[in-house]
Image (tube, rainbow, N blue to C red; front, side):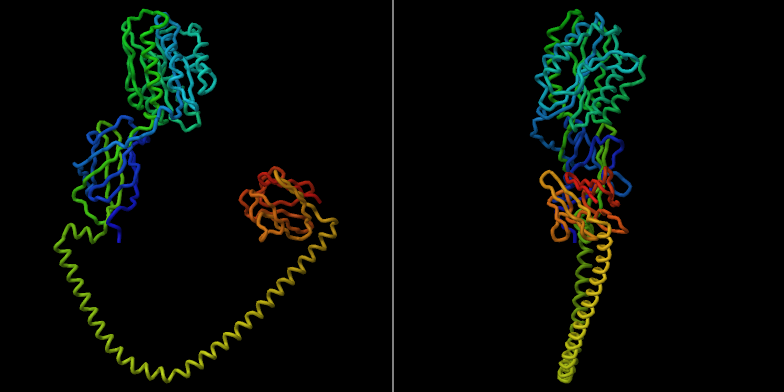
Length: 532
């Protein structure tokens, strides 16, 4: 009988697309059934309450909305600002008089904020971009590799000269630059939270690229890369703000205060604002990459403790994402019937119990009569058979003893014959070995020991176990019975005994090989050399 309390439930997850945005990531708790609870993770870092979801119970072919739902955020005590991250910072840099203020303000703000967001172990890369360069790339790396070296990052910014850019147009290829940045982040093998910070005026060259923001968002979500944006706001140009780029990838979209485009080398007000935003955004990368987890508690109606599978569908409002899972209700068929038809179930159970009791009484009465008859017959039979049983027992013991002696004799003869055959065979092979001259030598060495072993038998096994191997080798990389050397047809062969680490013979990993003078056998840090 299934336990009417908590038991493990197997979850089957089905997603409508490749991104697992909403999913159940815990077992279903049934202790208060028909109230059930489980954890729901959402890739969105902003916590969503029960008002942001619809929960449905599958009843036949219908989806029944569950009215009683409570979502409680699972708080995380981790300081995510100190967790390692991998970030590519893309700074728009255009050699144009209208953009000098923007370029220098961003670079000075970035230089000032570096010590505030770089932790030991972080992987940070800074790159500039505008339009495509040399028909091959858009972004220009300011330093060689991703690093946590603050000096390297500051030097890269200090040494960068935007005036050397040949491109003077006021637009940039933002989608293409981000896609190149995604490729760089994907190549980083460490399992860090990965993000792009875009520092630009967000004026893209829509005519020179076929890469759209839709494609960028799709690929970024597939690669689990968060895109954050800080827009340089100017009043004298049309605004091209695209906050969906950050929103759809679970990043943050920020806009600097409006300015009149005085074209000074640096805008101090915006520099301070950008400095603050850069530090805040990048210290928040890991938390936003993690998303949120909520405990969902559902009170179900018209469900019973029948042990049957139950299916729940979770749909996030104003979103294409959903998740469905199956759990097993507690109890069994009887409990389910009792809940749905209590009077009928009780009546049936009482009738069934009465029938069992009557049948049991009738059987016991018949058994009692038969038992009395059998007792008398058995008593006489016991008396008559007592002597016969004793005699039979004695005869059996004698026969068993004779059989055991005969079996021991046969086994001894067989073992002696096998031993003799083995001895004859070994003697023959040993004569052949002696006829070839001196016995071969197998020299051994590792980081701790060295030794030499004479191959003076047709079969010698080597291994770590003293009881199962002819030659004991004290090395943890050697198996209990690692390999054997066998003399066959005037040749010596080495055979691997299904060892853990195998063996490499003259640079090749082999299971067996005919040995020649000077052959080298390697097993981890142990080396064997064969000499004829």
